[in-house]
Figure 1 (cartoon, rainbow, N blue to C red):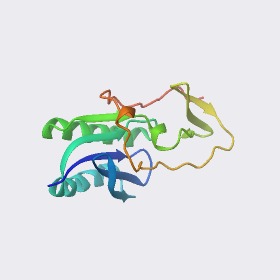
Figure 2: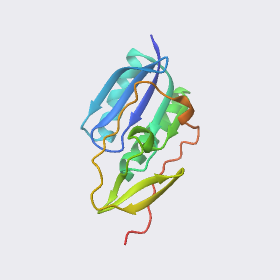
Figure 3: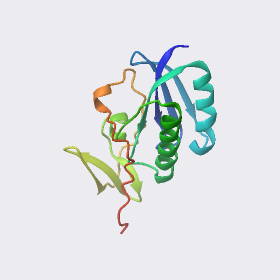
Figure 4: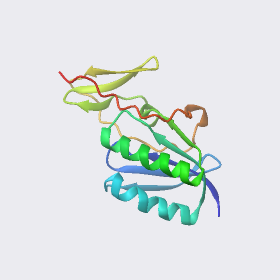
Length: 152
C-alpha cells in the first residue's frame, strides 16, 4: 500500500480531503454531506487503499460543530491507529482571507493574531487543498480554534 498523508478541511461545506504522497496532492475527495456522517466512511475507504503516515487538519476558525467533529474523529483515529496528528489554522487554506463568523463579523488574521472584525462586503473565499503541503505550517498543537466570543 502506498504511504500517504491525509489532510482534512471540514470548516464549511463541502468538506475537502486531500491524499498526499511525498508532500504532493495525488487525490481529492469532496463531499457535501455532514462531516459526522461522512468522515468515518471516507476514512474507511482511505485506510483500505493507503497506509496513512500522518494526519493533518484545519483547526479553525470556522463552524464550531464541524471543528469539534473533525478534531474528535481525527484525534481518536490518531490514538487508535498511532498516526501522528498535525494542525494549522484555516487561513493557510484560503490565502489569509476573512472567514465568516456570524452576521457581518469575520475572523481575520493580522500579524499572527486571529480576531473578529466587522466587514460590510467580505470577499467570497473558498478553502483550497494545496498542491504541495508545506509541513512547516503545521504543528503538533492540534487544539481546535473555536474562537467563540461574546456576540453583540
